[in-house]
Picture 1: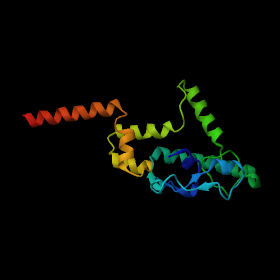
Picture 2 (picture 1 turned 45 degrees about the vertical axis):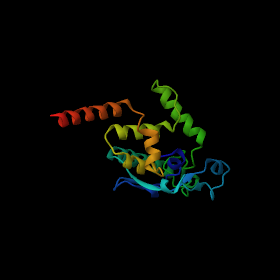
Picture 3 (picture 1 turned 120 degrees about the horizontal axis):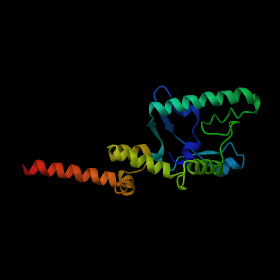
Picture 4 (picture 1 turned 180 degrees about the horizontal axis):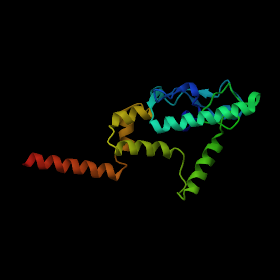
Length: 181
């Protein structure tokens, strides 16, 4: 997901039983920081960005645990909790997480893991490359990322991984052995 799509996720967008997430809006960080709750949710980047993605069982389990944690906060804070937003990724009081907090927490995680500083959007790229390295076809990755065309996905990701290049060459060599025999 793009950062705005992730920040806009509400629990009604997630089906833990079916293991799906409906991506149908984006958080406008500028409007949200002004306290303008009526305009804080906007459209996704493009028409094709609206999509339903499947998630792994382990992520569904993590989200279930996170929901329980949030429910404890809701009980403890009662009327001080922002029930109306129903956000998945939020502050402890249920309010939206500012863009700076999102970036700073990601930076702290990388620093703790002794990893170089990276933009948070790199998680989206990493996910796409790992999908491709696992053998997922380009069309699936295009739809998962919400790209308008397969060409966009191919232009950005097809040449990015040495593993993919090596796998393709190995498949080509194997094919040529069969052709020549």
